[in-house]
Image (cartoon, rainbow over all chains, first blue to last red; front, side, top):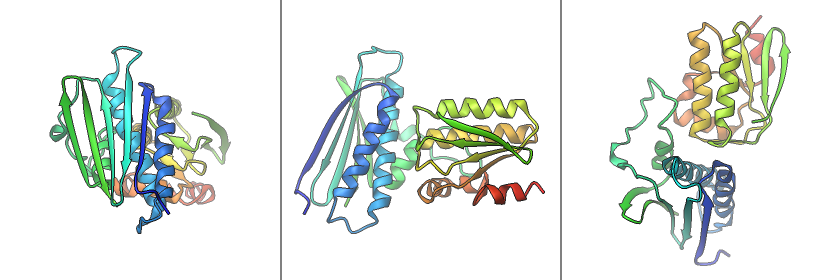
Length: 140
Length: 112
C-alpha cells in the first residue's frame, strides 16, 4: 500500500552528471505507485525522461554563471496527482515562445519540452525575482 | 560515452556500451559519429542493444550523425533498439527518418 503522500526534495550542482540520479529517482517512484492503473513501466520511463529534460534545461539556462549554482527538484505525490517543480536561477525563458517540433523537418534541438508536454498533463513556467520554477503536473 | 568498435563486412559497427544517453554523454556520441562520418566510406551501424534510456539530446546526437552521413552520401544505420527507446523514435516520428533494422544481421544483409 502506497503512503498517501511522498515528497522528495533534491538539490544538485548545475552539472549534467547528476541527470542519471534525478531520472532514476523518478523511475523508482513510478514503481512505488501501487494504485496507478496505467502502464507503470511506461510511467517509469516517462518520469525518468521528464525529470531528465526539465533538469537538463535548468542546468543549460544556468550555465556561464556561478559554478556554485544549484538546481532544486521537488517531487510531490498525492493520491491522484504527481507534481514536479524544478527551480533554477538562470535568466528564464518564455514557455509559450518555445515552438512545437516540425516532424517533417526534424532538428537536433527542441524535443525536450515536447516530451514534457506530451507525457504530462500540465506545464507552467514562472519567472520570479529570486529564481524561476517549471511546474509539471501528472494526474495519476 | 563508452563504445565498442569493430568492422564487419565493410561496415563500421559502433556498439554503445552505456545504458543511458542523456545531456551528460550525448555530446560525446555526436562527436564520435561526426568524426566517423568525416572519415567517409563505410556505412556506420550503431548498435543500441545496451541502451535502455535516451532523451532528446541523445536523439539529437543520432540525428546529427544521420544528417551528416546523408550529406556525404553515406549511411548511418540503427540496430537492436530496445522497445522503450524505440517508442521515443516513434513519438518524434524519427523512426521514419532513420534507417532502422531489428539486428546486425538484418542490417548487414542490406549491404549484399
